[in-house]
Image 1 (cartoon, rainbow, N blue to C red):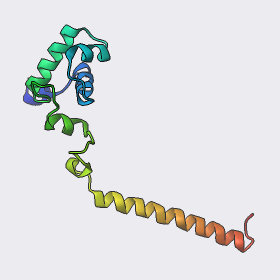
Image 2: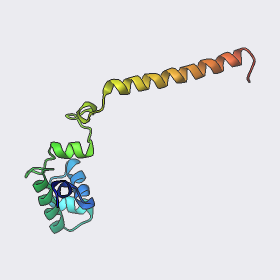
Image 3: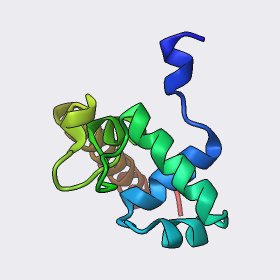
Image 4: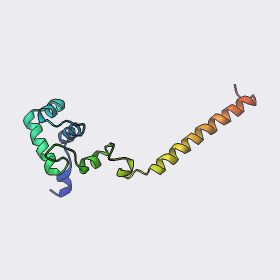
Length: 115
């Protein structure tokens, strides 16, 4: 098995990681929230540590944030390659189109063509 396949997360690992990223640190609570046994939760936590997604204090590492494109105070849109300028331009373009539609509709109504 190559390195890429060994780094992929199973559905259970992904679920446990998301619970950890939401702030849960105790394996008993992680197990309860994921509806799995505590033993299985501990094994999954060990695998997540081995794969580099969390540390021994059950804190998510950079790899976990990149994997899920998690938006938090430390990781804004730019961290994940999203260009803020492109987003702002797109929003402005949509606003201009909406304003043009409203203007044309108002003009047609004023001229008595519609309504």
